[in-house]
Amino acid sequence: MIFKLPAWVNRKEEQKRLKADLVRKKLSTYGFLQVPESEKVNYVMQHFNSVARHYDIMNTILSLGIHYLWKRMAVGLVGLRPGGCVLDVCGGTGDLAILAGRKIGKSGQIILYDINREMILAGKNKPTNRGIRNRITHVQGDIEALSFPDGRFDAAMVGFGIRNVTHMETGFKEIYRVLKPGGTFMCLEFSQPIWPMFRFLYDIYSFYIMPWLGERIAGSRKAYLHLPETIRLFPLPDDLSEIIEQIGFVNVRYRRLTNGIAVVHIAVKP
Image (spheres, rainbow, N blue to C red):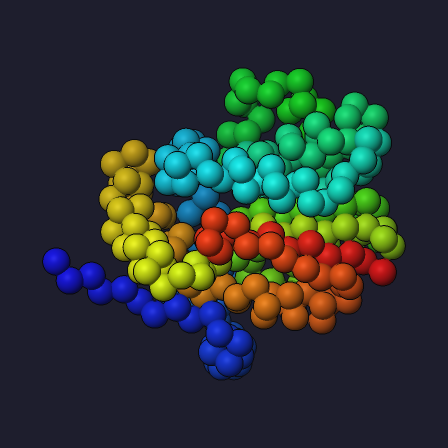
């Protein structure tokens, strides 16, 4: 069997050319599709409406449970303290919010912010970690227009969600705005594996096995083909660091996880 795998499109020069072309045409990417900017949110909403009910179980199956380790390590790098006020943007079903809630304790405040109501409800209705879930404040809204005043939070996190934002830089600017001076920002995202052979095997898994599992377990092959497409269009760690620095963040650093399948960026608002 010959595997036909699309090329990665995440080098800085390629990103700039693609972005310039999209801006000129007033388009945005939805996976490998190019859609009108004004319609991108609707595509994302439909995508997560279709996977919300199976989202957590599919994450666990597709990552063999490793995503829990990634999230635990990422939240650990934020340096949360008891009594802190934390924002989990694109928080989905609440994995990061729960981990943060354990760090800040009952005296702290954790707000989960997500544009998709079905994802929020899927997390709120889970029986696990009920004590912490009851302490989470859920807000439905768009990351590009956060409904909070300037300097509201000690820390802000976004995990596996910034890829789906229509204007990523706008989302980063909003996070920067609502952080207190000295506040910490954490971004956890998928990326390109380092070793070529590992990358090849990962690509086969992503474009052949994941969609097959998605169709049989979640009833949606399309949703789980969209996932690897968005990953291939996402900036590499150094390029993402540069974008975050251009927003105004300082002390930007990152750590690759599991040969670079996932990368966690940490930055500070001066």
